[in-house]
Image (tube, rainbow, N blue to C red; front, side, top):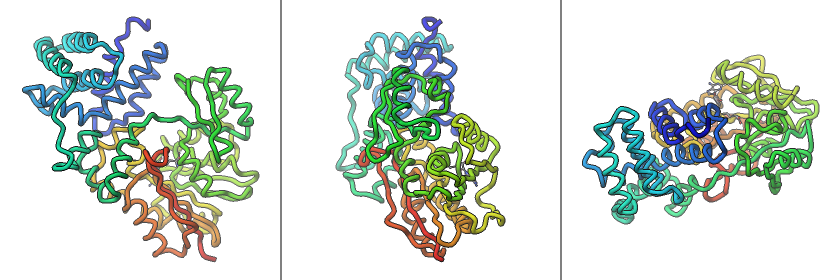
Length: 434
Ligand SMILES: C[S@@+](CC[C@H](N)C(=O)[O-])C[C@H]1O[C@@H](n2cnc3c(N)ncnc32)[C@H](O)[C@@H]1O
């Protein structure tokens, strides 16, 4: 069965699906991998790498294609454009794929998908690009620095300019390059079920290598897995996937064993589960907006077998009078622009603009205004986002401190991809005055 499947056609369909503005790359690619679970590991890796890579390099790939095609990419049929993009990605970034295979397969796919009349065009453009080793004239770094970075790192110019307003040029380039660094998978051991050493042994028996993480005794860095969701240790609820940055938010919250915690935007439940594992007889109330989201939390809690988390569907913008001054800790890991996780979810960069960032910053203020009331006097609120954006991060933190009876504990932390070796993440802790 695995032999009759055309991996490139699967990628083409993924890319076409990702043309829908609301489509999210991790969900679309995840759904395809689930559907084609029976494929061999190398076929699945090829699909993931080609789909993810084409999406993340789209601006550069279009820039190259435009220099070799009489028809600009914006005037092409979506299928032909995606087909050329994924083919140029293979030519430029996948060393072990022969040029002939790239061109022949693209031509075959154009025909199969009813563009017989464009087979010659596809062949001509690709052979020409291949003959020239994918070289092209890039924008001048000195004369057009924003455009240069935009093409070099496939980041929309508006976002490059936004990053450049917040950091010096070297830092901006490190962040942009950081999005392309190989992604590391970290997991959080379900220490209520087993020890980290036991988990390591279970993983090894499934051919998954695990290494300790300095400073986080419950965390492991894992490699060598294929489809994690199908692993027995995963299905037995022995761990969940969580980036180091999110684990650090749990460290910052540092709950006492008996604390009552409210996580106001909790789905899929990562931070709730991390802190719940630190409690003895304390508890976590994990809230989110919709039944779909709360269901995700419930599934994760059930898989891990945690009995100290309750789940509630609640709009964080609406005041819950019964919860006033009831929590030792409020976790406010709020909806944000997600610019820190572009490396994992490249669609974010194509769907974000300054207006959206400003709207999110004001939504965060609206939520913070409501949920700060739930903190007991002397209790704490941890505000976090997975973004790199002053309006959502530092500016909101300063605004919060100015407007509510809280004092900042320690300084805020902005983790940066390419510099801190984690996703981009912001966290700050406030203590409510007595
Ligand atoms: C950054 S994610 C939370 C991630 C989660 N804390 C974790 O570690 O797994 C933000 C969440 O906020 C939720 N959300 C958005 N608007 C909300 C609202 N008005 N009330 C409650 N939750 C909301 C989203 O559904 C999303 O699940």
